[in-house]
Length: 192
Image (spheres, rainbow, N blue to C red):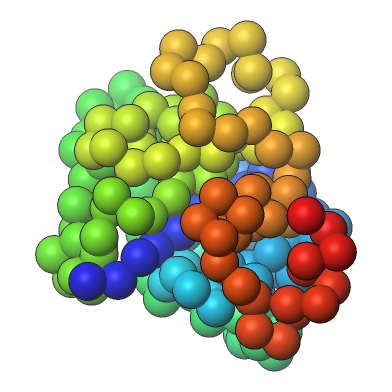
């Protein structure tokens, strides 16, 4: 079985600028790409994201899929591979089965990629990310980037760790698991 990290996208990897799927609005959060490089040395990387902009008519699903290809291409140039991007296109009022905090996509990843949830992590900047992980027993890290500071008081379920950003979250995961990082080892060990 494989260990995985399930990441929110907007506010976790890139700046949250509202509903968007335009390359000119994509700004990676400082340290996020380095964190993804570190994490992928021991974990498969997945993105689980609510994208209600599709249902609201802000952009089409086709435009979103095209943006995902662009997003993945940029990350691949940086040496980062996202195994799969799962997305919910619905608004909350549609009461679908896939919108976070539903664990629907976590369960799909288990079936499709043989994931060991007990040794995996959910990382995000919204309480529903933490709740999604809790629903199936996955350790969770709440980030103070994106909406994190704003919604911290809304946390009903206590995350396993609260980090200022994705980079600090990656350090915590490796320290907690006593893992060594391959080519980032010297730099990384100085950070712990």
